[in-house]
Image 1 (cartoon, rainbow, N blue to C red):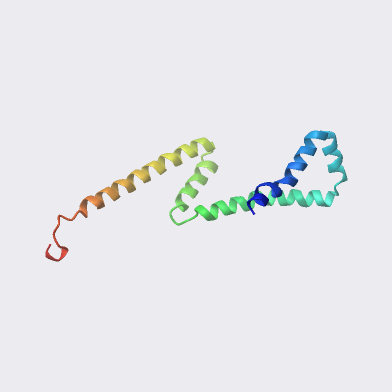
Image 2 (cartoon, rainbow, N blue to C red):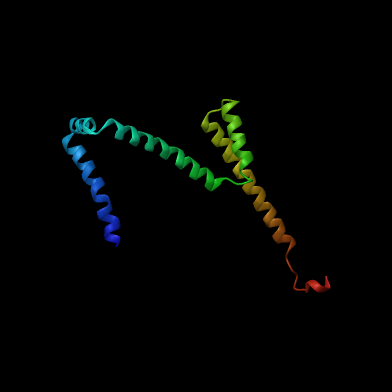
Length: 124
């Protein structure tokens, strides 16, 4: 079972890549000229759809009520203030650190307040 997963499934991909490298770009150009236009158009459309599907899956995985303001803030920073992506990423890292530090401080405060001194809660 593991042999099939490691070797057999990648054998065709490896053979195609090897043949393309061995015969060169002229052979690849001839191969693409033989493929019908409708098939190449369909493969191009499918390749373009993969980008959208990947973006949708990523958005679905990280989307929650907590992340909506940050997505909107990134959109505003990008479109209306024309900030580069690196600047938006740095702002996001700063916000992530601030939120992480705040949550850690709240958790530590809750742990400090919940220490029981050996007594019973009924007699407090």
